[in-house]
Length: 529
Image (cartoon, rainbow, N blue to C red; front, side, top):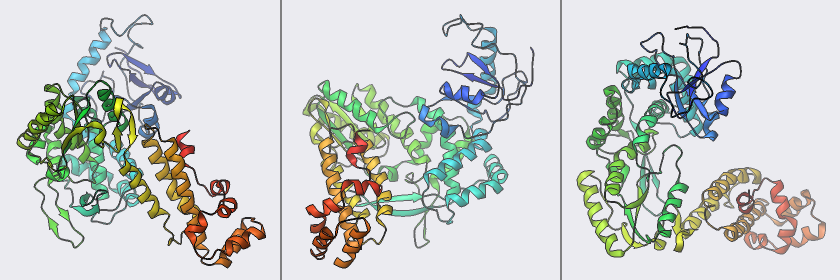
């Protein structure tokens, strides 16, 4: 066995993990990225000196490559002799394993990496990447008041201390900050915001646990999973309707995140995670109390608070039991987090499924089904993920989704805001872009044009209102090059701002080109991109 020290040398593996390939030279990183493979260091040396050091490989979506590859690697480490892609150009994935391939497989078994999960979580590369993820997601401070920007500076000076605490078992999560926010359909939703450091630690757990837990989950689960989205869930539901499953069992879990049973959840995790230290920390995170605005601490015996990066992953682990039960019964369904819809052919079958599945959820998972909101109906009478699946599987927007969008735009463009118009538009653009990208599965050409007209009118009204009086309107119109006769005509209309904004003169003076110059991007324009 020959060994050599090669700077910037890495071993990469494709879909067949037993077929390694050496990549060397200054362009090693570019070669790896171009292959759609991102290397992540194996944190902890293997027991054998001849084994390849420090590499675990993860296939990722191309758009996520730049995000994941934010780490500096030390590859100046002896490597064992490895032949590129087996033994020559004629090698195929179905060829018999070579001696080198067998040696690599033996090394993986010797490493026993699934029992060293905490070392991976506590590695500085993983913590640094988690810090960047939390920082990019922003978010409010926890009970200690530390912002995500301050967290990054804190980590630079306390990295070694944090790693030691995680590894020796002395790390203790702080209480979460309780925040109550209104629901779109009425009522209140309780959020639990961990401290910035605790969010970073949770994100570090997620980054390591997701590759372990996610492959074991159902193909019909789409929420908060890598390479899965709400659009995929909607397309799957549309396909079921096309096949004749036109009756929907719409399940609503009452306060799901607040009702999660800790014992049941931990038992499911223990079946998948061998490192008991990791299980201990997850239990501590679940049991962390909640502190309200008045500083009163509340113990938590159930639930996983919304607001932490770890909660969606834990929710999927618990609800995977529901997925398997539905699959064992041969039912067609789509689940996005706690939003589950089951497709059947008849109303009678739907009623039977609703009763039996509700019983399973309440008896086996110790969750509560909201009987008032759960229902059996024709699929086009149900709203799923903001859409309505119509006849023949065609998707259209639910009226409530348009109403929610308009409510948000009204808040941003309210006339009492003293904010300059360009700042208002810059705040509005992410809302327009996000809404358009999400609802583009439906035929919304006409709706986008109507929304553009209404939004532009609100922006014109806001700008006119900021002029305060007719003289101010005249000065403003003069500043943008409007002729005197038109300035005088609009100025003579008084202070009827909403009426003026809809007038023909206002459309001529503050036309669409002027709004584009101010930074406005229309719904229709984004839809056609």
